[in-house]
Image (cartoon, rainbow over all chains, first blue to last red):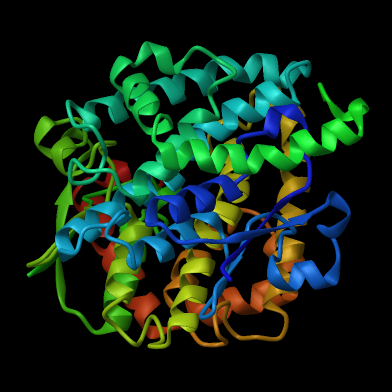
Length: 223
Length: 223
């Protein structure tokens, strides 16, 4: 059985954002059945888990052939054997890889800096001084990204691909703000990707154990 | 002819760090001949260049089959057809992809935040307040990274791979500090990778036009 590690519970700000959702979504698009292996925060530092994931994070992915970590690598690995996530021609495959790395390395750092300030440091003096610079750089990047998307529905080759899984996940981490709405083509793109049944299933499957944990321990809810 | 875009000249802090060096190094390891196409800062905003690279950056890569941007994607593409950069077995290839993304998405953000403060914001109040937090997070990540490397020479499968090209490039961006020296296995790893003849050729080839430009325009030198 293909298996993805995920958390038993995370605080509300992280619900729907933990990176196993990228892998769940890819597996759903590819039609590959899988199970999840849920871990707790107490497992993150164990030598046993660190041997699978050196930074103590999720997800780890295992199938009968490979054992991997890094959600971007796992999504690309799954895509390489599914025409639902990557076309067959070399030029098209290269463009999917290009946009997958663009999401991960050219867009995510700008989003992560803003989200990091807003979620973890909002009350600190340095964050108040720095945030306008971070938002300005992010907006420049999003403007370039919108220009690159143009009138296409998806980033690589005009068709949905593994790259859109990462790009959607990255842009969703701005949902505590109204920034994406200022880039209407990106906002429509994000809505288009989030509406996919495979994404909705992945999201529901990530959230289900969190809701169960909160039903068992009501003091968790709202955190 | 395979072709990589690079800059005619960059300021001294960026010399040896511009991302075409990743692609040059991969091509050198793989024994693939290539030429470079040098651009100026004035080319970065043109519609013609943006059609190739939506963010106006380098490198862009073209061979007879593909046209790509994102240095991580290009290095992985080159690796997929060279046993000098990736083994043949699926589990080994997955591990190279894992560590290539780890360099790009789990190590680079920590390095880039510190380097960004030191190179561009050192005199700003927010940066003085923030830097200790950033260095602390970076050091935790480097400690985990050193543990993961253990006594191996390289990160994936114990053999040099495409992943080491990205990891080396990322760790080199701390060379304005003495931080890496505090992690002796990482320091030895970095020295081992930088000593490779293919890296040295890539570095020399990136630097050559900068030196020529500075010989023609001495006012550039030292900037």
